[in-house]
Image 1 (cartoon, rainbow, N blue to C red):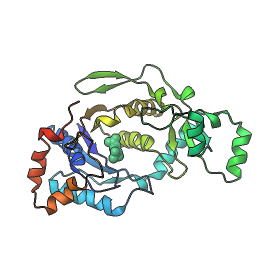
Image 2 (image 1 turned 90 degrees about the horizontal axis):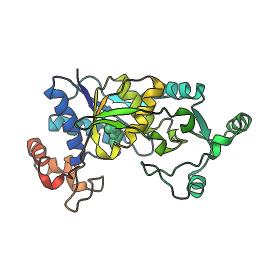
Image 3 (image 1 turned 60 degrees about the vertical axis):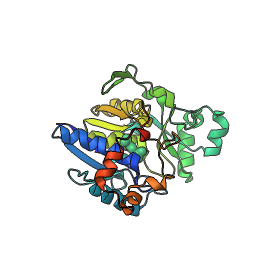
Image 4 (image 1 turned 135 degrees about the vertical axis):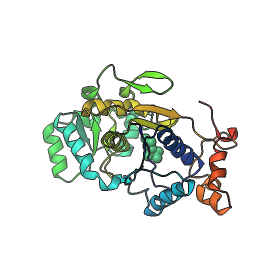
Length: 279
Ligand code: GLU
């Protein structure tokens, strides 16, 4: 059975771009008599708000995009993510990183990974076990990084719907962060874990996340999780060709609704070419 999901982060009100992503996932599931899941990716305590989480559910219901089963709220699942981090650490595939953002920016001399995070030069990978223990014991805060050189698995592929097999190059991300100093688990870890344990078979999401799939595929290989099929869709843009974002207040679903637009009009707008950036 086909299982899709919509997995927004409650950091603002949903706009037309979110509606497009949600509609895509919902439509694929409903057309195949499958299941459509809703997940709130609220692991970043500094940016996520309950008000937005509530609004997401209200806006989706208004659009008529109904979901199956309970909503999974990531901030309530930290023990699950901890177990994954422990499993990787036990196998020597991660290490604690004490560097500050400034240290990293200075040392990495502006080389960036596909997610535009600076590529980590590996400073803390070189620390001895004793030094790590001392610093942790002294209460120094640390992030957890994947040791890409030990973790990489050559020859990984994922299947992109309508395209075929895609060869993965997760090493382009360098020693990626799996848990931040201020958030106990990263997007990459949580999204991959949750797609696996929720039995998602088809991940539909924006083309901006396609590069990250290489990393997600690696985590699946390391953890023995199944690999769903991926369908990355085009991103909606404004009249100037810029990707829709939180700044586009006029295109939030709330604003459209308060201006008297019907849900059906919104869904029709999604088919209008001026909002669509062709892949
Ligand atoms: N939570 C992510 C976002 O709001 C989407 C994750 C995904 O679809 O993989 O951008």
